[in-house]
Length: 375
Image (cartoon, rainbow, N blue to C red; front, top):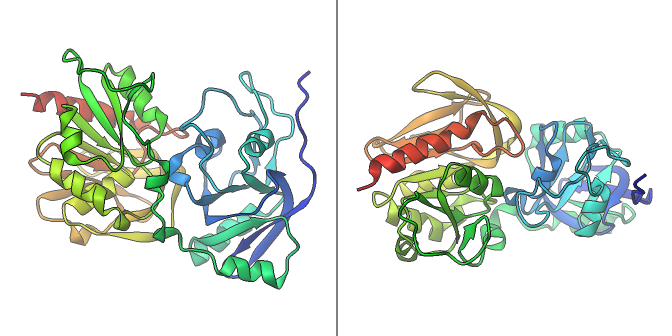
């Protein structure tokens, strides 16, 4: 029988910048950490969430009451490491049952020095965020004192940090071997993915569809990107405020009309900015695997996986860019497309992980668009 490492039942606290705090038990690492506190409504997929680079700089509150019940495996990674600043749960499983499980949630977090808190009222925390908006907070094992409270109030602003530069690859590589980019295979469709904080599942899906897949750094120039002779380019999801990503916006602007483009999540917002549109911060964002989105052209409603805190302002889009999808919860923009150029964008995660796989069809649409655009 597997012997799992058990956490010490020491007190820990989630302290918000507005002074509100919640106390529970520490698990994972026993260290101080800070970040923007957000909630996710997914029932499963905690390993994918923890390793999703879009969560860099954030503390996740899981609304589903139990996490860790099927453990951690060697398969469901969306990047090379845990990306979140911390985790808050109602209850975490101490003895997981999973066919491929190699460690517990506690052991996984501890191994990468990520603190977590259990035994708190996650419904009350979620209600606080919905009523007041997402805000900075910290996880602390220290006694609740005036000093610890004031330390939280002096935290940086999440939107001021360029997290994309922290999570992006430093050099281009081919998938799945993560080696140097080979000479182009003209028998295959070459897709470049700009790594703003991509999830591996984007690369897996493209590879499964017979594409040659290359990931490139977020700071790559348009000229260098085009040197790779891509048949299509995907602007990936990622963390942070699109308003501070001027370099990425200029690169996107320079390749529009030269190569078919698909923007996903942050990539969609960068596309909008490249067309002259603006973005704004949502009160508490969209994070989970159950968000309804309507395709305006077909009328079909898709249940989508989402993870973003910003949205496109529809009133700022130019006349040659139309809205293709809308969110049925708050009617924010969930997709755009250019009326004449091969450029589309979606705000939700077509690669899911975690979430429903219904929306992988977007990759098929993109590849068809790429094939039609080939000379």
